Length: 166
Image 1 (cartoon, helix red, strand yellow):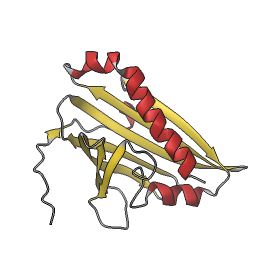
Image 2 (cartoon, helix red, strand yellow; image 1 turned 90 degrees about the vertical axis):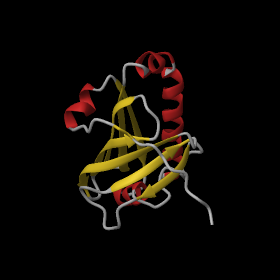
Image 3 (cartoon, helix red, strand yellow; image 1 turned 120 degrees about the vertical axis):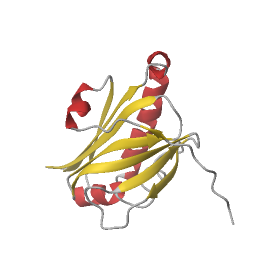
Image 4 (cartoon, helix red, strand yellow; image 1 turned 60 degrees about the vertical axis):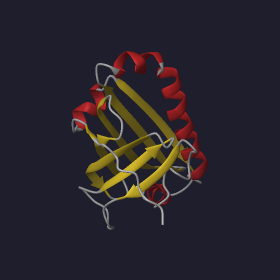
């Protein structure tokens, strides 16, 4: 039986919709697919969502039982290095879900949020993924310098989304 390592959680400042527009680091990706919106929503709420999309996402665990809704929580791990705890403050089934990160396993982040929008289009559907973050004072200059790497990593996850949402 595997033993789970004890994680020291660093609290983050919870956010709302205003932060989605005003965050100092903002990444938006749009994926158009010729599938119904219900297929995209199912992929976004699957047990293996994100993990099956990119090798950069190395773990995902929903910590709230189904059916999901406002208040749903999960933990997501990137590269086995950073785990974040998320709490959904919006859950419009089939259309939109938005979370604020409430804690991270490493220090340095101040705020982080993500917004997922699914829209019906004439040819199928569109998925709009917005990821926003604000580093703390120590991490801010590092994130500015490594922003091309961060952008590449996020773009890689977005490409994985594109290939999975078929």
